[in-house]
Picture 1: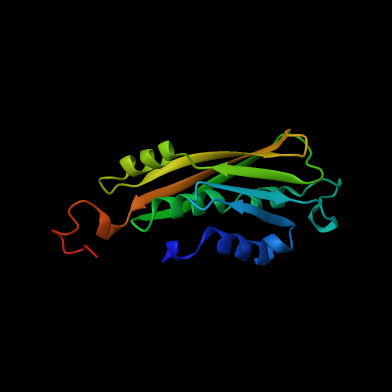
Picture 2: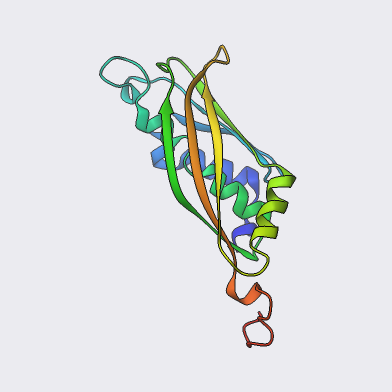
Length: 164
């Protein structure tokens, strides 16, 4: 079911999703193979904080779902993928348009598959830099993603009568 949506369709849906739309967050790209995405946040009067720079909640929100979404779609329907934890470190004041790029490597996907091959859960940390128009990092975001093979896709599922 989760792989039934195309990346371009998801990009358009996310751009109309009220938390993104009204925060000035725009998804500019999701790769056709689900291995990368790019998101930007434009400065608007309603997403600035008291001192006139980007509100930290908007900076975190612009990165929130992407590691989970990319991992979920790239691994396919045999896996359960959830966000587990997240943190943000503010490096310098964010002004103007900022962006974040998410790049999911085949090596990481292989590591996730190997770590969950026997049915156990695996927690993986991803890191993303939010950068300004000059390429300087304004914030660093860490997201922990929970990955586990679905019960009916685990080793021995057929013997236990769980196979789909």
